[in-house]
Amino acid sequence: MPNDTGTQKTIPVLYSEGMREVNRIVAQGNDAQRKLALQTLDDLTAMMLAHTLEKVQGRTALLTGLIAELTQVIDSVKVQPPYADAIEGLTKVVDGARKRLATEKERLLPPEA
Amino acid sequence: MRNLAFFLTATAFAFVSGCAQIPVTQLSSYTQAFSQAQSASEQILLDYDQTLKEARAFLRARQAPAAADAPAAPYPLTWAEASNNASTRVPDDIEVRRLAFKVVADYNAVLVQLAEGKSVQEVKVGATGLLASADKFLIVAKGAGIPGLSSITSIVATLSELFEKARLREEFVQAAQKGAPVVQRILDALIADIGSHYDARAALLNRERVRTVAAMRSAAESVQKIAAQNNVAAAELDRLEKTVNEKLAAARDEIPVLPVKIGGGGPAAAIYSPVAQAQVRDEENTLDRLSKTYADNVGAMKSLGGALDQYRKLLQTTQASLKAMVKSLSEPVDLAANADEILSIVFALRRDLGELHAARASR
Image (cartoon, rainbow over all chains, first blue to last red; front, side, top):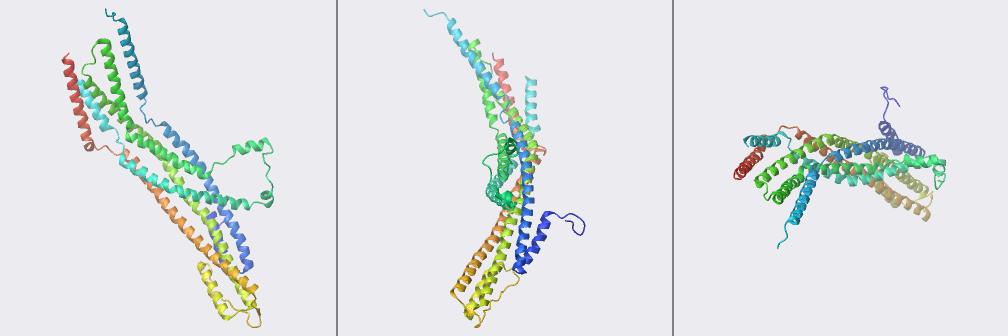
C-alpha cells in the first residue's frame, strides 16, 4: 500500500499503523466495534507473523551455508604437524633395524667354548 | 662450521622476528566474549523456539476450515507425495542456530589449540627420539654412536621447536583470515535474528494484550449493565465501582474512559437477586484474572526486551573482539618485545655449535 510519497509501505509499518487504529477502537468503541477490531487484530497479527517467519527461514538457509563454510575451514587447519607421523614412522623403522642387526650379530658370534 | 653457525643464527632470527606472533591476549578476549554470548543464547533460543512454535500454530489455526479439519491419511497416498515429503523437509530453525554456535565454538577451539602449541613439544620429543634411535643403531652397527650427539640433539630440538612454532603461527594466520569473515557473518545473522525474535513475540503478546483490554472493558460493562437493571444498595454500588476501577487501572494507559461509573436501577428496578449477585461476582473474578494477565503480559515483554538487548550487546562485543584479534595479526612485529627470545636462541645455538665442533675435533 503506497503512502503519500508513493513509496511502498513495509509490513512492519502497516502493522504498526493498523494496530494504532485497533487499539483506539478497543479502548473507546462499543461492543460491536470492538468485535470487528479484534478480527482486524488477528489479520494484522497473521500478516506480521508470516512476514517474520519468512525472514527467519531465510536466515536459517543463510546460516546453514555459513556453517558448512566454517566447517571446511576447521577441516583445513593442520593442528598436528604433517611430518609428525613421518618422524614416528622413521623412528620405528630405525629401532626395528637396530634390533634385527643386534639379533643377527649375536647369531653370527662363535659359540662359547 | 662458521658458515653453518651464521646460517643457523640467521634462520632462528628470521623465524622469530619475521613471522606474526599469535595474539594470545586478543584470542583470549574473543573466545571469552563468545563463550558468554553462547551461554546467554541457551535461554534466548529456548524462548525463540517457543515463540516460533506459537506463531506457526496461530497461522495453522487460521487456515481454511476444510483444509484444517480434513483427516490426514496415515501414509502418503502416492510415491510423488512420499518422495516430496522427504526432499522438502525443512531444517529446524532453532537447531540450525544451536549448530551455528557449536561450529564457531569448534573453530575457536582449533585456534586455541594452535595458540597453545602442544605440538611443539611433541615434535621436539619426536625429532630428538629419532636422533637417539639413530645413535643406538650406530652403536650396534659400528660400535660407536654419533659424535657430539648431545649438541646435535640440542640444535635439532631448538630448530624443530622454531619450525613448529612458525608452522603453528602460519596455520593460525591462515585459519583467522579464512574463518573470521565467516564467523562475523554468522554473528551478523544472529544479531539480525534478535529483531525477528522480538517482532514475533511482540505480535503474539500484543494480540493477547489487546484481547485482554477488550475483555476487561466487556466485563466492566457487564457489571454496569447488571447494576443498572437491579436495585443495588448504595454501599454495594460504591464497592463495585471501586473494585472495577482498581482492576481496570492495570491498563489505564489503554483505557481512556476511566474511571467508569456504576449506577443502580433504583427502587423501581428488580430486586438484586442472588443470581444477579453471582453474575456480578463472576465478572469481578474475570476482571481480577484479566488484570493479572495484563500485568504479566507487559512484564513478559519488558523482560524479553531487556534480555534481547543484553544478548545483542554480547554478540556485538564478540564481533569487536574478533575484529581486534584479526587486526593484531597484521601489526608490525615488536622486535624489542621478542629480543629476549631471539638472543636466547642465538646464544644457545652458538654454544651447541661450539660443543659440536669440539666433540668432532677430539675424535
